[in-house]
Length: 229
Image (cartoon, rainbow, N blue to C red; front, side):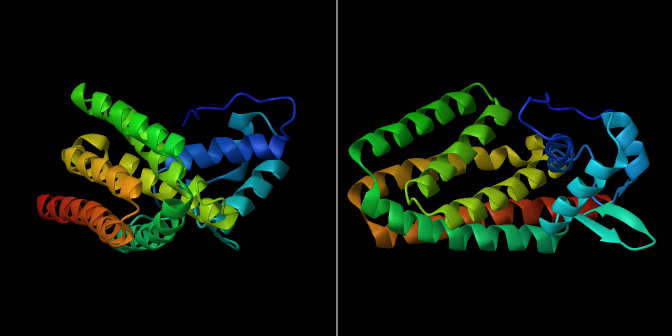
């Protein structure tokens, strides 16, 4: 497999370069769930020795993206219905905290920036640019978390959103796109409620937002299971 290699900046070590490249490949499902990763093959393709590859894989194991089994090798972590459930349960919990704190800290300028993101998402939706819409969607949710100034919360939310993106690539955008219009309407409501500082309604909407997304994936999984019978 030909990896999409990120450009190597002068300040990055070989390990960071390999880690970034492999992580991107896993997130975009260039490496399929369950696929075996062979260190010698990766080092040859990336033009580095096995040492930075081995170190990068250990970092990816710490993130739960690969499993390293002694005497067996390294495999990309699987994606299952339980994975979908876990991701959206975590996002609901993390975003509940984020919106609670952000509602007290958000300035008028912050609200304007969020409204601009929603406007940009509406345009992406209008022209059926699912990829751009998903990128803006991540920016929207990350901005809410950034408003809290809570570094640990931002780190955990970023990781959870990355995992959600992996679902997007695994199940493919065209199947998930019908959920986009509903999600967009919920984003609009979130900005309105954030402006009003209506915490009770915001918490309820955050739960609805994540549970509806989870249901969309679960419905897709069930449909694919029936088709394979």
